[in-house]
Length: 77
Image (cartoon, rainbow, N blue to C red; front, side, top):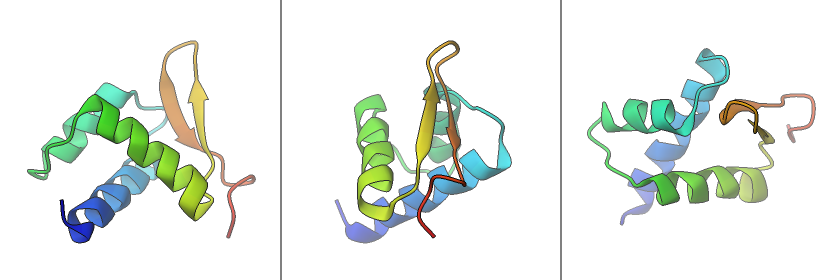
């Protein structure tokens, strides 16, 4: 897989999380697929983890409804 595809997925994930309140993995995957980028549930989970660990974007999981959001106060600049 090319690095540019991975970066495009990262940007789509961030964009979707910023524009939508607490989407589920299913919603995020559907959004990514709408751009003809196909990734699995597990790949999306890895991407979310890498956004946290590599870029300091604090992505919060709400386990009550399996939704995701960005905590801007806890994220690095």
